[in-house]
Image (cartoon, rainbow, N blue to C red; front, side, top):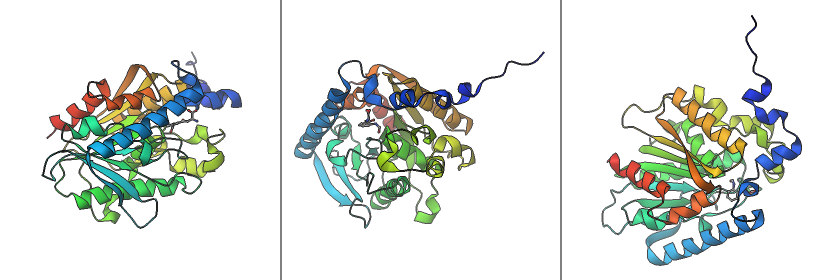
Amino acid sequence: MEAPRAGLGAQAPWKEMSAEELEKQYSPSRWVVRMEPEEALRTFWEKGTEVTRSAQASRQCQLHVPYGDGRGDRMDIYFPDTESEAFPFLLFFHGGYWQSGSKDQSAFMVNPLTTQGVAVAIVGYDVAPKGTLDHMVDQVTRSIVFIQKQYPSNEGIYLCGHSAGAHLASMMFLASWTEHGVAPNLRGFFLVSGLYDLEPIVSTSNNALLLMTLEDAQRNSPQRRLHRAPAPPADPACPVLVMVGEHESPEFHRQSWEFCQTLCRGGWEASFKKLPDMDHFSIIENLTKKDYVVTQIMVKTIFQEL
Ligand SMILES: N[C@@H](CC(=O)c1ccccc1NC=O)C(=O)O
């Protein structure tokens, strides 16, 4: 008897979608249930700007620190109230479909983490049309190398990215650190509402400024390339948390779930978490709170391993 055959849609459901449906699947604000799409976006960036101002006014920080020679190679570093330089670092890469957002509106987790003893770097990068995907990946790589070189006695470097920023962080699974002269002390990844296969995005309006070709998309898709990537470090452990909000599109859920499975198959200690009641924006906005489940997961992951 012939085995039932899975259709194309079982592996790549997006290939069978209409242009309109694909556009909707890749428009996170249209899946928010607490408010209208435009309001969700406006609120997100307004909150981001406000918490960044407040973090800069209340925390010890170094702003606009150059991590390279490019004008956009800048990060803001926020410190715990301790004298030592031997704290863990969390580097945050903001979202905005590689074409909006900035470090100046992205310091969501600074207060709860710095008060717990974690230094937080909010990393800026050149969004499109100034930056290409390859350039942004290079910037993220160099920002991590910079932290490792500047703070060699760090107690671990943790990467956290949101959406397009989670994609940039996940490209670090493919990084070759030897050419940068240092192996960063990477101890964990927090990937929030990310995109790991960029092919479905090529034909959506999100590509209008980015102008990525199919080859660009494939080269920048860890979901496609991870099986040929370096093996995960055996010791120390480097857990990967792949998170997505309940109120996100089926495509965003599929991207996170499939990438988590690919990581596990590649030997990474990866786990998947769907956050009840959260959407693409509240999942990050709530990081301002120390009792939010994601803040607690971060703190636990960071300090359990010290
Ligand atoms: N135009 C998008 C905007 C968006 O996706 C977004 C906005 C802010 C931060 C992250 C985002 N998504 C991915 O990077 C939307 O429909 O929501």
